[in-house]
Image 1 (spheres, rainbow, N blue to C red):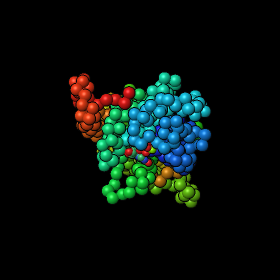
Image 2: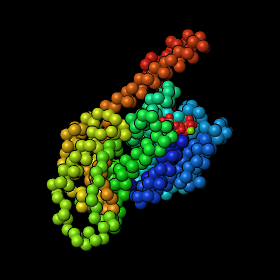
Image 3: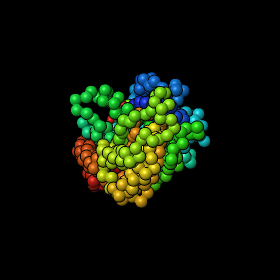
Image 4: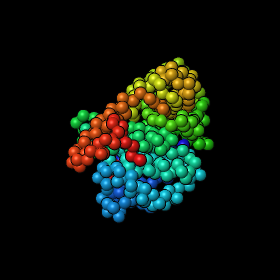
Length: 392
Ligand SMILES: Nc1nc2c(ncn2[C@@H]2O[C@H](COP(=O)(O)OP(=O)(O)OP(=O)(O)O)[C@@H](O)[C@H]2O)c(=O)[nH]1
Ligand SMILES: [Mg+2]
């Protein structure tokens, strides 16, 4: 499917840049337009592929191009004040050619965390296309302010978008890795998973016709209804005689006789299990998921309807959902069969509960300190206990 991607803040911009690279490399064509918004000039200049005219610096009068320093209330204010400048870049997007907006942001900082929900609210008011969020949660080692930012922004962002796809940095951090090196690998992981998912709905005319190709409307229907989504992925290397094998393909001709159907089916069902039970972008219990979509990608001769049907049924049993869709994403030149599973409307997410709890405590501490220093009894009385304030 075709997306208008808007990266908000540093993480958001870098990930949009990566999606552009992925598109170039794979020819999948999912990024119809790319915009990057930031309060930090240096971050915008550091991007490689987002077109210059689509890089929007906001909050210049307030922070002089130096970022908001993890203050997400300031990030939200600045986004509201300068929303016309962001809209100016979005005006150049041929919106009738996109299936949806995707706003990408790290939720722990200030600019993306504060601004992304503001932009989501704005876009929803103006356009009829769905507005999705891709929110990146901070690592638990990043500290209290990042957790508090993420928890508050999460609450607001999930309310403002049509669906919030989540990637948890904490679940993907590797021990002993430098943060920067770690991000490069993590960003590859993000782009690979979401790239296959969104690329699935982009199989055009002239492409290899599969048995049951996933359409962008199936992605949209799986995401509709809102809530939080997570994505699973697993792949296996296969022999692909389409891939530069001129001699071999001459011998095997057009027939699929060389490929054992039972083996193909079993490979697909085992990849479905691995994808669903392995590490998700946001780890959670898959039981109780409201809707799901299974995408099997790879050379068409290694995909079959029976395998996908079995995988789909297994997912229905595991999630308890009556709304599990499935289909092919044929990639004739690939040397892998890969399964991508979108779980939409997940309910049992320990990390989110933990995030909210830590944030409530942090908020209480911050309030306590503030109140003590102000010595203001009145505000103490008015205080709402144990509730996390949304960003707006
Ligand atoms: N996956 C991933 N996460 C990142 C990356 N860079 C930063 N993050 C995460 O995103 C959070 C927010 O960081 P930034 O995106 O730099 O923050 P910002 O939105 O620019 O906001 P300010 O710098 O405070 O103005 C961090 O706490 C990290 O958890 C990245 O390249 N990849
Ligand atoms: Mg920044």
